[in-house]
Length: 290
Image (cartoon, rainbow, N blue to C red):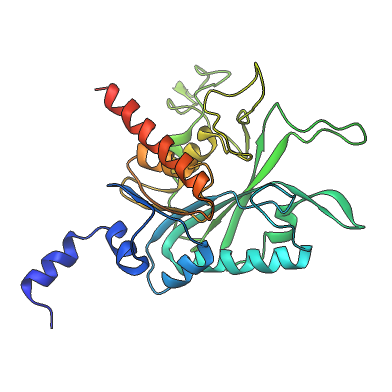
């Protein structure tokens, strides 16, 4: 039986507190962020009885031999992906969303650069709204094929009839005919146009004289602008954002700066330390604005 003080304690707890109660001491925690040096499948399995997550935004390993991954067969990769994606489904609130950023991988005797989205799009319980194409200028050079200059982002929701979509927060102000009228009224939304399903956002580049300003020592860093648009579009202030593959910390940095909560998992402590440094630097920059 709950006493009055127990009820007050329950009401005062945040989603971050509940996560720590279930998973134990984190690698890092502040007011808005909690990070674990843990396999995300293990962490999400422990959270599976609690629907806490409003939005998941992530870019998992692409199975192409990066330093942080072990190459799997295509069948093994798909099975592993099914496991973690359906764990995301289990811990997502009923009106929540899931955005999955994936690139390409070779399929032996079938293809050189197969979009991973072709392999995974229907391998979870979510309802897929659409595929977003992320287009960028810099990329891998090629002599025997066209140089790839895009990745895919799959947008899923748990309930096809009820989900968050803040279009006004991500409108594109670059309107070709802003003063165009119909029946005497301005046709274009004053906040801008729908940004469509193709987003042109620069990739985080490395190298002498071409390194991006936000670049940190991580082999597959996602640009802030990409995840910022997604988090603005599919969550609200105070919501909990999950990244099962935190990497360099882009999701946490963006979520916290937009007044969201964030939980993340990462197996590599060096990457977690990078993420924490970025989080702390972002907080310093925000303080400097006041």
